[in-house]
Amino acid sequence: MKKNSIKTILAISTLICIISAVLGFEGIIEDWICAALIVVFFPVFVISLGLYWKASDKEGDYPFVGY
Image (cartoon, rainbow, N blue to C red; front, side, top):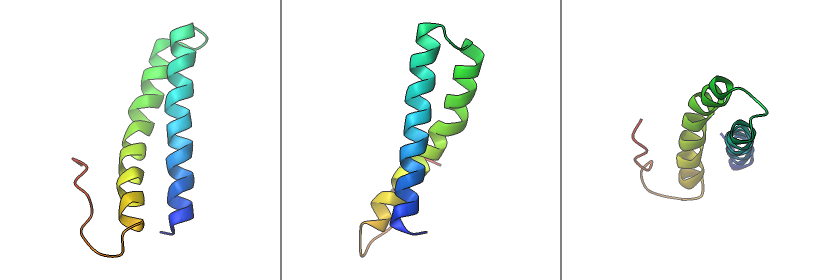
């Protein structure tokens, strides 16, 4: 994957997690919808962050992300 596409996925997943948490705390969306969005998009965030760190490095291993 290219670094720009990884950065886009990283930004989108970050925004979805943050926006869903804020909307859930404010009571605008149901708690289960907030939890479902975070459960789906947080692993996407973690994996894309690890890939972004790897894409910025010329040598070395993939960082351990726990998945």
